[in-house]
Image 1 (tube, rainbow, N blue to C red):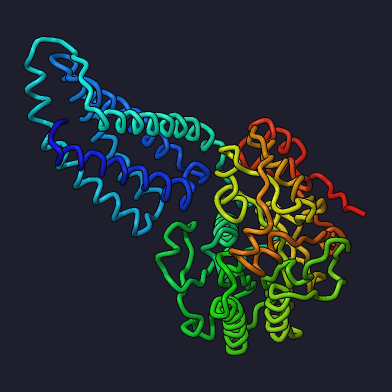
Image 2 (image 1 turned 45 degrees about the vertical axis):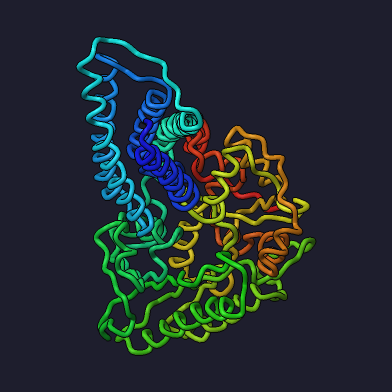
Length: 500
């Protein structure tokens, strides 16, 4: 521990490991909230607890005999866990490039550390049994801090692994039970948060699914069997398409609305919709229905009006985007092709969307209302959205605008309180409006600080029943509260109640 090179490499290992945990596992990938990550979380938890033991031992002791052998055994087990972790990561998810780079650097640096540490440990193991307390000044303090950090992270990962087992989305086929027979379905945006669940439901139900994606690698995690297309122009004229579902588009809430970004947001939606129209025109048989994405942003910011499908478009960039997107979709409509404009609210699920980003914040007790908290939040559980898409595709009486929101919108303050309650955490730390306006400009004003009270009047009129009509039930099921899942299962199709 007196070798400055060894100390530097050890602290570098700690720093890279901390970055990997915070940036990749917590902030970017949100592994504790991704279904199917329980094994990886357990491996991370066990490895971090071993790291805590090693850091404390190296920081404050010089172990001899059996104590040194225990330390050697711990490092050997850690190497086995790391190899297992590498296999598990490749099995259950696609690693981003930055995570692969960090893992490579961690492996190389760890190898160098072991090469320097092994001779000392082997030598200590041959000595009589003893443990000598031996501090190393600032290095010992830093290693103690690192040990505390990895111990907390390890315990957290082990608890998160237990919860993660309850986060599974469950069987998906029944979500599209409204679709008759075996349908040929084309899905654009099928690799996203909503699209992937939709594809899983269609595939499990036995439908013939084609997914359009610009990058075939993005489709690696989709349910199979599924046909992947990277260009609509490559599809032959005899391509069978009974239903087209268009969810593709540049994410609208992923960053400040610069001029270039506004152009990408609009162009991505219009270009894809026009390409679908071109495809339909040259097919031997046009699809019977196009369910085209849109959003409740179409109504603009409206804090007071109850908004149903008859309300005219509002003002603002989001409203302009929706209007242009919907107009492009309606130009495809003809006697052979019915068009449904899916005006989606905030889609809730643990593995993505806005809630996916909020869950880690609220889990650590740092969540709360945004701005005044009085703005209305119109939301929908992801599974209800999938069911509504299938219903809209199957019901020939549904066309034009269709609000895809639950029948009970809530204020942002009530939404934050419900998230905190579902997690068993306080939700009292407000996010002030001013910094949001300064950082995000119009995006913050329209999508975060503004609100709309949107009701799914057309869906309810056509007999659609929401499984999660209330925010408390939706959030409890999303975060894996077992009692909520049992309660929901006992009344799977609870009647919707529209607010007045």
